[in-house]
Image 1: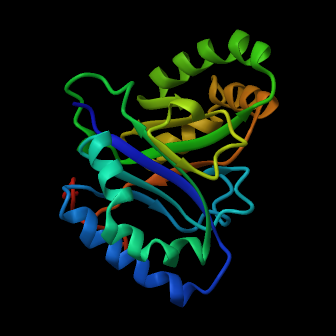
Image 2 (image 1 turned 180 degrees about the vertical axis):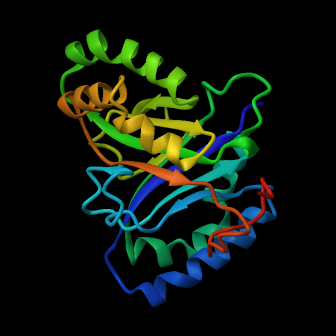
Image 3 (image 1 turned 135 degrees about the vertical axis):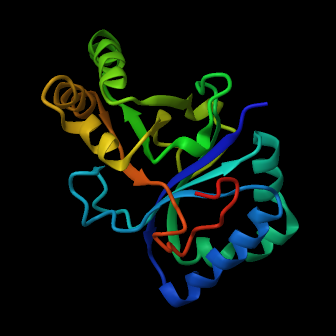
Amino acid sequence: MPPAFLVGFGKLTGDFETFAPYVGHVKEMMRARGAGYVGVKTNVKEDSKGTEECDDVDISPVIEFASKESAVEFLTSPEYVEIKHLRTDNLRFRLAVLEANLLPEGADTSKFGAYLSTIKKMNDLETFNAEYPPLMKANNEKCNATMIAKASIADLVLHENCEDYSFVVLIGFPTYEDAVEYLYNEEVGAKQTAVRRQCTTGPLAAIKCTNKTDAQPQYTGVPHDR
């Protein structure tokens, strides 16, 4: 059974002090289910090299669950519903849950050092289909990228505020530097990025994996004790 991932892009619209307790509650609820924050980007607006169309984004998390069923159970559980308002009252959040439908069999997700997460609206499908796939394949090989998941909005496990978008993609990398290189390397990345920007719109972020040494507030140690 493949894992499932929650990805998202959030803009703080309310009071941070009111929102902050939400993270602590969620960490404990996820830990009990063998899930956890595996990546969190909080300096989204400041990191121009590692983001795309993120002027209205303050935080971008990646959460891993053991399965899509576990993700659904968590997000619909009475204990989560009880504290969900701390998020919805203070954060405008585009949230997507998708199964790891492209993850190679036997892949160890604990080995990832970074992710590339994006929620996009397709504006020019013909050009995209003609030019993007070969560029993506070449760039995946160059930057040691691992395709984790891709899904149309209609095929997502769950989503919030994604109705105006077309698809969601999550890619894993050995390091954060690999993820940024993927966007801009002269050999193929810059061309891939140009086609993506021409044909689609929507936020994209390179996200470093959580780990103990960074002492990130969202670090949980579950499912990966990095």
